[in-house]
Length: 398
Image 1 (tube, rainbow, N blue to C red):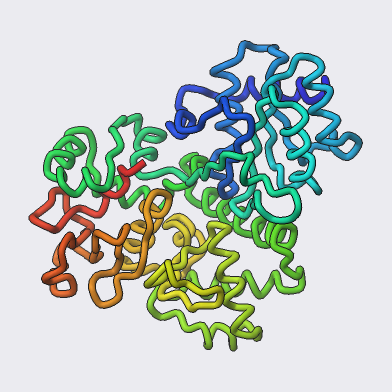
Image 2 (spheres, one colour):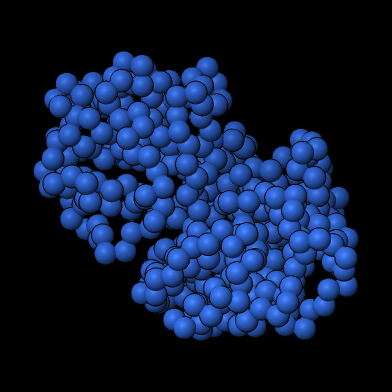
């Protein structure tokens, strides 16, 4: 166990706390068991190490961070570690990459039941499930989902510009005032264009080519490692999944044809639908439906997007400005709101209330004419004009 403490101390020495995501304050770290899931690369590991560094003095033995992909766990069980840690005064155990440890749910359940005074945090893939199998942790665990950076967080991380977050209702009702406050500190149209290319993942270092290679590596890791392990995808179909992502990355959302995709991949329609659902859960795709309450297991989505605009720039050979706008809208709204296809009355229906039509500065209101709580979200504008709002405002929701 001392080996794990030494590894933690080395990692803490390399962890900066000058810029910390506000998400750290949304987590109730005092709960007995919490889970933090999210796509690879969004900063889950950094968040845990920052929490330790900000709340415990160096060398403190009451807290331990460890990753379950460590060689240590080839010779030791998680249950044994928890027992030794607790008996030696440990009270807060933070476990990274939990999905890489076979039988983790069963052992976490035993730890929860046997050591009620031990607080446990687990992190893992967006595909992480706490419900599957006999060891159902859903009644014991407080789950959190960690998205990538919002446009607002991009400003904090890379521009040192601090602005508040707003609810969607506030953004709509107080758009002129909020826009004025933002415009006093930055040029949001230019920032929006930057963010769409390299703002979602918190590891951009100024080299765009390396950034996109890292994103492609994340996608490859999810498809090659996580899907077979966590979703039971046959490794023989890995290449077909990569082809599917490539085809979708180079298709306009409204041009996707499931039957055609099935022919291209040479797999049946049901398998295509299953893979789309998995890729949606893995934060590679975002599926849009017209009625979430009645979505059936194999129902065709109305539109298919990549999960965020940075994926679009990393994986697509042809990028349409309309696709960028709609993908940005999905990525900023999805962590906090229910999003549905607006059918013939706007592009998106949000929380069964607001209708958004997405477009450029000259976009009109014909598709949402007469609809209550309907707005045009447009790029390349700095200020609202009636019910036409700058699309970049959505970047200040979290």
